[in-house]
Image (cartoon, rainbow, N blue to C red; front, side):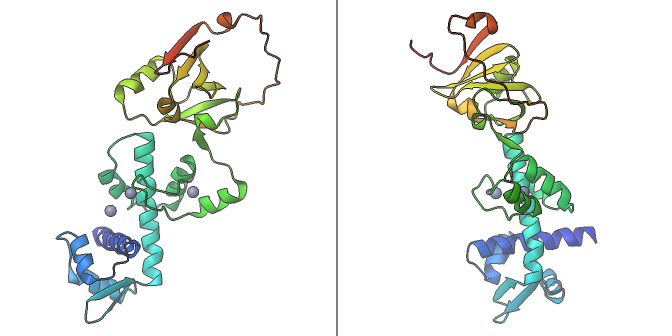
Length: 251
Ligand SMILES: [Zn+2]
Ligand SMILES: [Zn+2]
Ligand SMILES: [Zn+2]
């Protein structure tokens, strides 16, 4: 039954977290379940071979079967947290707890791939690796990378912007920097300079690192490096120049 399954998943989740903390007491589980503890559920999980109870009901541990199921739940929860935190930049706890009950490994793996196979949740807890992560270790290609990791002169499409500040987000959007737009990295130091929609935009470190791009934008063709004409018209190439929280370089 749906709700029964969900209920058990919450126990499995808590038991996994307890294991991370080195706890195995029934008492710890009771505390972790925060008033939702039912001995009945534990008995059922024991019958199903998900947990093992010892020491006159004082010690509880996941069996191998239970651990396999718990790993899936924890993975979905923490990938969900990363998604909500990185992409939407907001409140993630409650929603991630909904996402963990997703039954589709495929969706979890797709989100994982989209995010570049993150190793930790926003709380710094480890995310159990999935099939996609093992595969990516072989091909070592992450789909989404921070803007700064582009080569100088490389263009890529913006995937998402993880900017906690609404005002800054709007200013970025005002400068046409938003998901889906092509952006080209011109300079990394002393601050990031990008070209976007014919404008040159200087970004401070914090803002630059909040921009993530698709590493292998399909349209991207390695450019043939043409020597920079020093006497050329820099001003004409970029019709507009913006500085975004970045001190102008003294020249
Ligand atoms: Zn949960
Ligand atoms: Zn977390
Ligand atoms: Zn992955």
